[in-house]
Image (tube, rainbow, N blue to C red; front, top):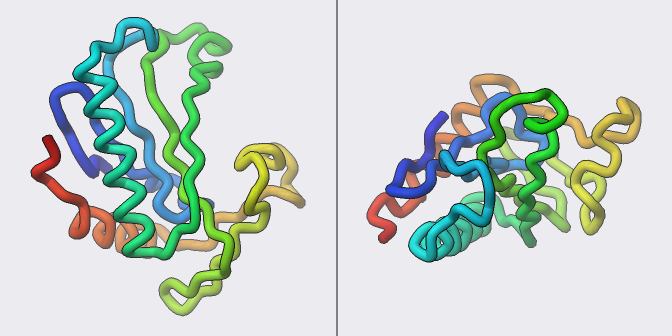
Length: 146
């Protein structure tokens, strides 16, 4: 689901998974970081700052992981596209939709345990609840970012 579309970047809400409430991907059509213009870097900074503001205000996020890995495209012989993972992190347990959400590995690499079924962070939300999380973010997101 698209949260934002600008000149250089679009923000896709991670509706397939909200194991970290507010998780999004910020992407564009370039194949390499070295292809990004000064304008693209500036817009990226503005978007990252706005996502932080939204997730702090709406969900009470503590801090954020921001990662550009691009490994899978090369591993899977696909065209690489520059994208960043925006991952809100939560020191304190939050209550959303009458569910207790706990960032199980706060303070650690967000994917360290991702492949371990027992240890990984679980997505506790239904499809309907994920849509509501998206709508909460969309209604707060500043659409006039320049």
